[in-house]
Image (cartoon, rainbow, N blue to C red):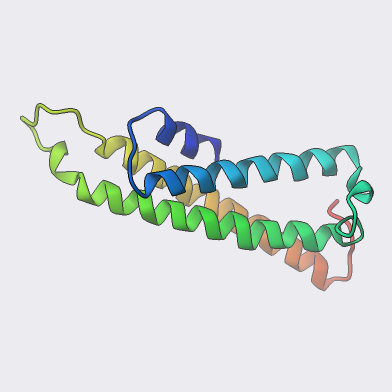
Length: 133
């Protein structure tokens, strides 16, 4: 996830890439917060969500992680497709094609990882387990 937004932020971006950057940073920061609370075992301190920690992680991974990264990947893939002409030999202008393409690949990988994590949480929930570990 961090590779996605670092790749986008390191290059000039415009238009819908602002939303893609926002989505990636939001998902990444929420993941860090949930990971920190899980690592320290402090999820009980979170009101209302602490008793439903596995469900909270499931919703975060499937709805926010997969949803936001899939949208961001689609946006960056579309922008890469629109800039594909500049990868031709002899094109002398500054080209954002490789940046958009690499951001799209990183976003796709992040979406897949969030999907696997969400499916793992779902399998644990189906086995009536309540905590994340």
